[in-house]
Image (cartoon, rainbow, N blue to C red; front, top):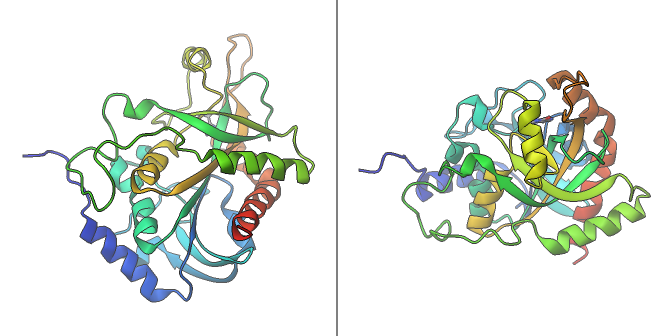
Length: 287
Ligand code: HPA
């Protein structure tokens, strides 16, 4: 008998139907807000909030800096559903539960997933406050088979063996680079590879050196499992990392990553991140 309990299509559908029955619009864009970036939702008009704890079958987030609610409303002319607070593997949830909201979005009829996160800058040219558009990821947590797709596959959610080529929609990356130019911040916006580690501890110097050798530009504790599920179920993904700290690659420099700094940098850059997100949604609305 299979050891991993999957979350059934029926369970996902029940959550999707519950949310749809309570909201006034039918969202086409889903947004997941990273640490310190929850105020992206302030731009949403006619907002309806639903706390995770009031959605039967939904997990609840436990991290300071992550509020734990859905915000549904209009953004740049499109109906959106934003998650203020996501679920991390280190909180103790299995990956299938961490990424359950992505499947709920799909079953609700959402087409695009926009993801943000806070990340450590492994690429030595990155500065604190830079925004890295995610072109690709290295899913370290997945290397040994720890995947949200592990267990029996339900073809109604997606195929058994989904490709991950272009998991991050290349056309949306190209568009975001034009948006960055329009915003006058082309130097702040980079394009790179994100690496998902389990956390919750930050990386050792040796780990950072290894990630650098492996072609990683930024490291964090989220996103890849959500994007694997999004790609499995056929959502178009756009994602970016806010570089909240520089990962230490040098034993002589005593640099200590900490959550307060991560959240503070998020706060200081949230209006820029919000504007980038809004302009991306505006360009999708114009399609
Ligand atoms: N490492 C992992 N996750 C993070 C970091 C980091 O340096 N900064 C923000 N999230």
